[in-house]
Amino acid sequence: MNAGAIGETRGNLLPHCLEFQSGEPSEEEFFASLPASSAVFLLQSDSPQTEPYISKTANLRRRLQRLLGSSAEGKKLNLRNIVRTVEYACTGSDFESVFLLYKLLRAAFPKTYATRLRLRFAPLLKLHLENQYPRVSVTVRLGRLNSKSLYYGPFPSRTVAEQFAKDALDFFKIRRCVPDLDPDPQFPGCIYSEMAMCLAPCFKGCTNEEYAAEVSRVQSFLNSSGESLVREISAQRDRASAEMNYESAAGHHARLEKLKPLLAQLPEIVHRLDQLSAILVQSGTEPECVALFRVNAGHISGPVNFSLQASQHAKSHSMEARLREVIFTFPAPEKVPAIEVMEHLALLKRWYYRSTHVGEIFFCDDAGELPMRRLVRGIARVYRNEKPGETELPNAPPGSAPTPAS
Image 1 (cartoon, rainbow, N blue to C red):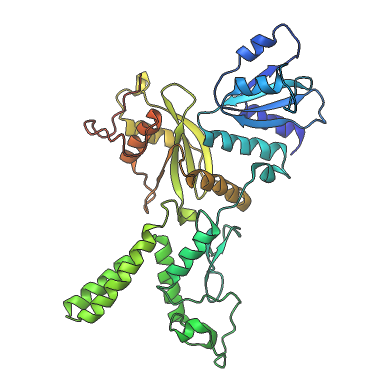
Image 2 (spheres, helix red, strand yellow; image 1 turned 30 degrees about the horizontal axis):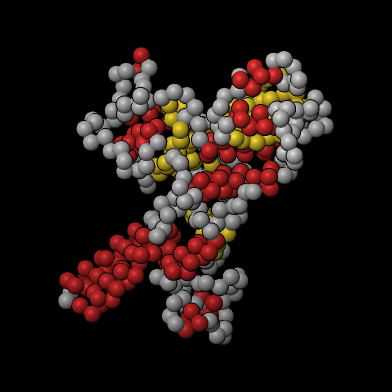
């Protein structure tokens, strides 16, 4: 990206710009004018050949006093004799800081930003539907987004993804082998075919139609987070019971009991990637506001501020109605490069799988609808810095606004 484009990006992302002169009488006023809150900032010298210093902080005033102040000692980094311009943007949460930092570094250092951010791509399950005999594998790379293959995730680690795939595929009979197949009746097969755990297309142990039907079952399983298989096995168990075939019913019940723990440990965030749609709620920078981020097919946009107090012309609107209006202001989904989706997924995975992450996320259902009432309650919890379950608003009518803390 050229210098003009970088400057334009900075201007859009960092609205505040201050001149800094070391040793000036107004130096104390300069530090006093900085907010003592979380922010992302950029320090630039007069020389265009000097790299900008870009970082995030929980307290902008304290951080810049350390970097630009005159009391730095020892080996601490001090830039007071180099920096001439300070640009910054206040942020309401660590997620917002990381997301803004990602945008800035991507614009300023297009070749090294991933290393600077220590981005680790999210593990995904890939259903290779473009192959004549589809299979499931674990990957951290997205192929062409318009290909037939489907991706599911993000998982917290490759180990977790591989273990889930292994345990899940035990309920199906699609192949586990990696090479492209050239079916040969003389091929001896593998241990999975010997154990009747694979339809064995490698030696034409099944017709193409039978294998396609089994792949369709796997796809339904992954699309529904396992619910399709629960319904299938439950129906088989009930039918066997109705026919008084209790031995068969017991076998189906045992399979169901084996399946439930597997599905219980599946993280809520794991979706088919092109259907991963959600609203992420974070603390806002404005008073009585929260910040909303939109996740669409793994791509993140935002933040958009949502005020808990209705404006004068919207006082007759419920909170749900106002929330829908704000969500509608997010830009329409557009085609983005696969690498950008991978990077956004990496940032989302990093936030979601923290032992204690701040903020909440709400996923769309199969019809693409958001759980609006849960979202309203979640906004109240994030605003009050409460954990899920602490704010249920039992006496408030649906869609009413939570009372801001004093």
